[in-house]
Length: 141
Image 1 (cartoon, rainbow, N blue to C red):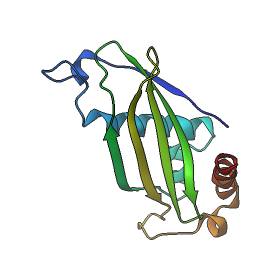
Image 2: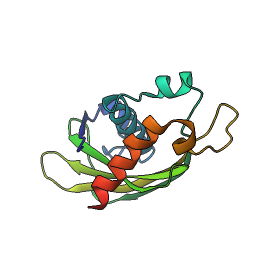
Image 3: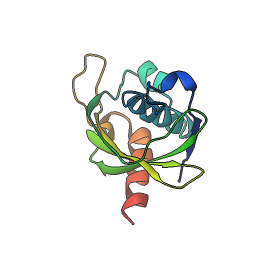
């Protein structure tokens, strides 16, 4: 399943140079991943109600082209690594108008219980495991 999240850049997200402040990109990735999970029918609230969470362990972001107020970015998340305990989500982030790559980024996550102990989703919730496994397999091929 291909998912695209479009977001218009707000003036307040830019710095004195008129470009998006670098710290905002992490928020944009989180927004896209949250909307993607909602689209998959596994919003964070549902996971939390079932006693699970997916904390971020690592973020990597390489800045390629700047965007400014009024620009629209398109974020396409996809799973590049998944083993039921950990996963890596990569993000294609482009300027909708120009097609330029804005950032090259990934986030690494771990599935945990309420006490933040790592868990294997294959053993704890096969339905959720299967959703992520399917997305991972689709991306591999």
